[in-house]
Amino acid sequence: MSTFDVLIVGGGMVGATLACALRNSSLKVGIIEQQPAWLDGEFTADGRASAIAWGTSQIWRQLGVWPAMESLGVTPMMGIQVSDREFPLQVRLRAEEAGTASLGYVVENAVTQRALWQAIQTAANVEVVCPATVTGLSAGADGWRVTVATPGEPRSWRPICWWEPMVGIPRYAP
Figure (tube, rainbow, N blue to C red):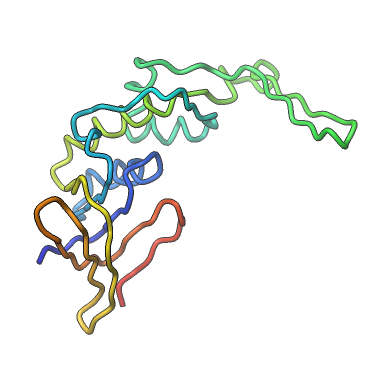
């Protein structure tokens, strides 16, 4: 049975960012992901995009993935208008008035995934288990056990900590 220090369930935008942040650490990191095409670098351009705050772009810059995103295509947000249809006032933010090059960026989700996964796949301490789904979680005297369904046979691990990006809460072994 393998042991991971951190087990990430889901290699989407949040899970992949966490894996990138941990890729140069001494921790043994596992990612459980359902999408087998991601291993081959196939990120379908389904038209979905995300508005990324300037601060998030700086996090990705520190992680070394932002240049790849920029080369694949990002669109700067030069202005933002905040309003409520039932309230007559509006707030308008402009990059020029804030003294910044942009307030954030619009990035296709496929661009974000491609850049993050390129970085993950070069990490010696990150193991991607894909395609796979979590089928069980149980606590024992020696810690937690995560059971995963993979083609061929089920696998189990004993993580010290795991992260479920959709929940957003880290969980720790006793």
